[in-house]
Image (cartoon, rainbow, N blue to C red; front, side, top):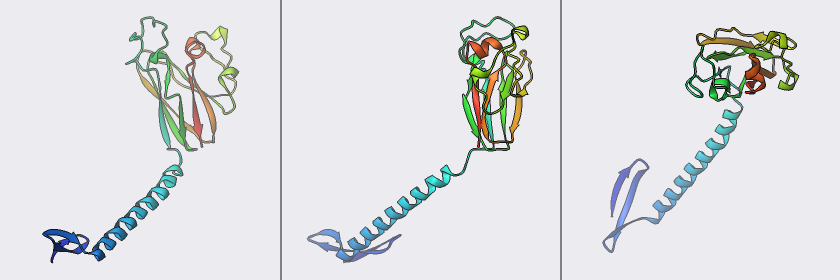
Length: 187
C-alpha cells in the first residue's frame, strides 16, 4: 500500500494483483465530494439567474438613426436610391432603460429625432403636408432633435417617467414609407 498527496488530502492506493485500486472508504469519500460539489454548483446557478433577471434595465442606451455603412451607400447631398435599407432605419428598434435613464440618438444622414409621450402609436401621427418633408406633428411630442444632414451628431434625452415612448424619424418619407420608428421602454 502507498499514499498519494493531492488537494483532497491523502489518497491511499493498495496494489492488488499488480494493479492499484482505491480503498472502499476513499471511493465513498470521492462520491460525497462530487455530489456536494454538484449540488453547490446547482444552487449557485439557481440563485444567480434570478439575481441577473431582477437587476433591472440599464440606465442608458443608444439608438442609431441610419447606418451609413449599410444600405445604398449614398451620402448627402446626393439623392438616396429610395431602397430604405439600413440607411433609413432605427437600430435597435426598441431599447429598455430605467426611469431617469438617458438614450443617446446617433443621427447619421438626413434624419431628425422626434419623441412622443406614452400612449402615442405610429397610427396616431399625422404628417403636416404644409411642413413637408418634415412630419411636424406636435400633438403629444415631447422632444424634437436637431437637424444637420451634412454630418453625424448625437441627440440625448432623459426619460424621467415609466412608459412606452414612440420615437420616429421626423422626415415624412422615412416615417411613412420606410417605417422609421421605434420604442423606448422606461421601467
